[in-house]
Image (cartoon, rainbow, N blue to C red; front, side, top):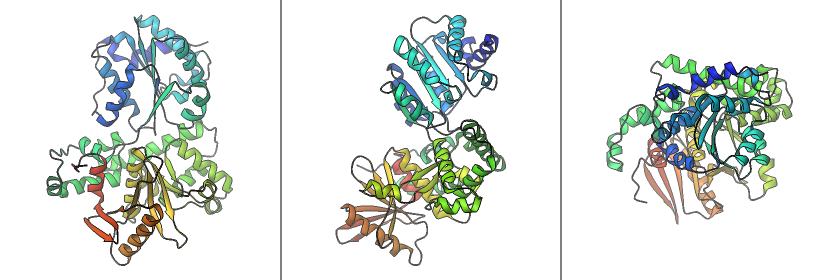
Length: 448
């Protein structure tokens, strides 16, 4: 029997606008909101996916704030299923129906209602109830979030096909980081940005060290930033991994996580990791899959026109956020190159493009082969330090890849080098990381 008194209290707590309170203050994430707000007028279920604490709940509140300008407060219901008071009901098949009916009794909305269900993965068989409501009631609009890509792929794939529009939510991009930390780039021209380079580079150093989780960015005490990041990691393991996947031994998957985050941007050998931790390679691969499903890590496959070869080659591992990588993996100070590579990977993934790494038979390697559509469109190499033989090595690999993919231009991302190099008909552009990121975040006026 579900205690509706608990549900009433939860609804009252989460929906302050019913009682004249405002929506919690936040900094707008314009890039997301420009895409999300038009979806409120559509019938399809809106799903936001992403790692815990990446800002999904804040985006829901910003959508609610937009609706409140034209919509009755009674027609908007938000509930966060991470609420500890609601956890005991998570497996009850009648729970969501009871929440909905309790809301209707409390507020008596007229016409279309908007149901904002946060961290829906905590509720067992949620997708069946949402499908039933979607199919029978055109006056209910669902906006839901989840912290597991497994949940929002496997479970709704059969029941909710054609009914869902999904958006992946990442921690802040570098452009968003500048906004959150108060650096206003009033001019997008290259000359202006070069004049602002010292300030921008200071911000980039902070971003590379502490990452882009919004609450961490807004925390002013450095020691507390690290503590927050460690707490995020602990929460992800406890709630999204151990609880969700019914795992009993936290030490093993934590051990895999630490080793992965320490060896970021390198090919992963399940056999070597298994030997180090005393577990089988099969278990290591299962753990990596789980960590990817909860968005802690992301994998980068080898590029091949042969799917069999692509599947047989080792993948590289990157972390969803540099801050959590540094707090857990203890790698920031000793390898800036891989930290920069992680930033570049995330920026490419955030754009929605497919991305791979490539290596030829001579062992010459390119960090990122980018596919915006069906064809390869961009080659990106990250080389933080161009001293010694590094530049020749990176140029050699890129030139070989340009010949292989029939491309005439490619990019080497550096700490502070800005130039172009021509090799026959091929052009390699050397770009500082800070400038490349501003271009990706549309803060550089390119004239394209």
